[in-house]
Image 1 (cartoon, rainbow, N blue to C red):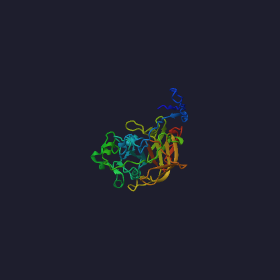
Image 2 (cartoon, rainbow, N blue to C red):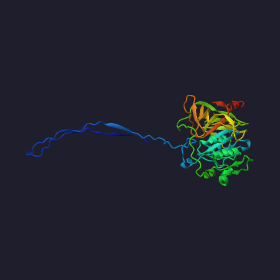
Image 3 (tube, rainbow, N blue to C red):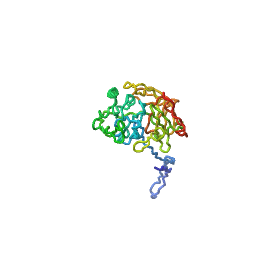
Image 4 (cartoon, rainbow, N blue to C red):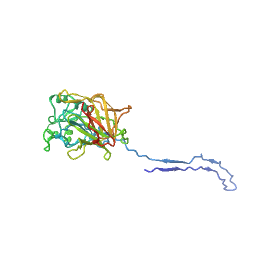
Length: 364
């Protein structure tokens, strides 16, 4: 709206009584002179400023809520396979948060869905004990997985995660085997079916990270991205794409594509350096230690900050702190978290090609 200027015009009024003569017999009368109070002419400028309303946010992305019903549903964690026979996967680019974990070989993804879903999603594989610590802070999320050994299954059932495995979900869980992949890399489901089975058991997830205001850009040191060499033969990288405003993922030296041709991308890449211990469920299975503290690398908006991560317990969100003690908040949007051992990642400087930076050295 254009500003309009209104002027208040005030006149100074001086009244004087005029002598009136009616007839010769009438006495001459004179009214006393009266003076109106003096006022000042003032110019008043009226303006209207339009500000964008501060809308409620989706907790796992920091973006505006467009559908309150969607915002009130529980989070779903889907265990997605990353073995060679599982690629290309389906649905990961619609997840609010993706955790990439070291497992016995290659890696596995714990994809967290809330603001949007995916029909279908997969391939779905078994869970690990490390998923319990990661998922507890989401307030009873629904766990979509193919199942696990007796110890893992028992621990999941005793945890605050809601078991939505093939057997637990039953015939209405939407699970099916695709024909374009070989078992065990061909199990899929529809998240709309999983949400329909919730029956109020899951809660609306709280925020896991701190987010910047929409108009505040993430600032740090310009950096192109990061290269990862995790357990087994898994090599992947992320590079900043200023055209889309996202980080694009490569598997080894090729674009990481989903089944429909979508390039795997994210708004934030968070590299968590953590210890791995042996799982109580299987001596061959590593378990990421995601409570405590350690080194964190945060990539957002083509920038990079190194700091410290802290997580008091399994019910607590992640807290990132820069070297100067200030909090590190993320760009609103999707976030991919790499749970690495020390030495499994190297940064790619701004202006450098991915191929010019060697893969990380020997694993610890």
